[in-house]
Image (cartoon, rainbow, N blue to C red; front, side, top):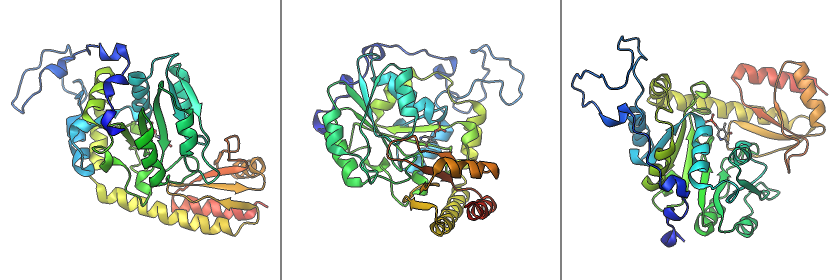
Length: 349
Ligand SMILES: *Cc1c(COP(=O)(O)O)cnc(C)c1O
């Protein structure tokens, strides 16, 4: 299928014809020499944020490119993954005509974005062991199926999907496959970035909200072919990543060792949480996790949720999700928070 893939056939006509807004900061890039910038109607008095931010976030992209082994032209940054995912919808899906495929139980934003963008969401349930149903997906797809969302490791189930199944989908689905790797840094697995040059229909999204500990600054990352990135660049708001976010993100991303250390601590805490859960008689199943949370089947999720809440511990009740009857999702906290949680879990009967 790679041979016949042509992005031109997938981009919305209105986007294909679009001439993007050209901002002052796009037009002239300083080469480091001191210039007098009188082109953007900014207030000239320095306060750290009086200038528009770099619309292409070059310093941050350059560091990410280096660390992840891709070119800057393979990266688009957004105001959280939420913006990145929305841009992907708006670039490829014609409202009231095209459809996407999502695989519940999964991250809720794919469905919300399909609703916002008036794009049909075709849901193909995961198998009982939480893997993509490849045959079901291919049967559900038609010529208007533009996007398929694979969340791996998956939220809320926690598992990374089988490489064989993902490969089958990449090779046989005729639209774009978006692999949401929000939790990849907690997984021992390599992820799919190194396959960008093999699969022209692949988009990988990541975020600084989870392992990198920066949910508050809103920084989402999209990796894809230069062609796909060029299309998304055409429709993104010119200054979608603000100056403070660019600075904070760069400061954090260069501290690779610190992030790794925190991830290792979280993984260690996850294992002690799992060990404690295994001892509880009301816990029926602990799902395998490649992420910083654990999905747990209990005897009565509503009751256990309320008991925890009564002890000031907020977890996520996922029981309304398909295949997730009576499940709670526990995010792994600090060692101290984890200790508190375990104490309370033992007290409630
Ligand atoms: C938390 C999460 C994100 C992060 O979204 P941001 O907008 O970058 O904070 C993305 N995808 C999944 C599956 C998540 O669970």
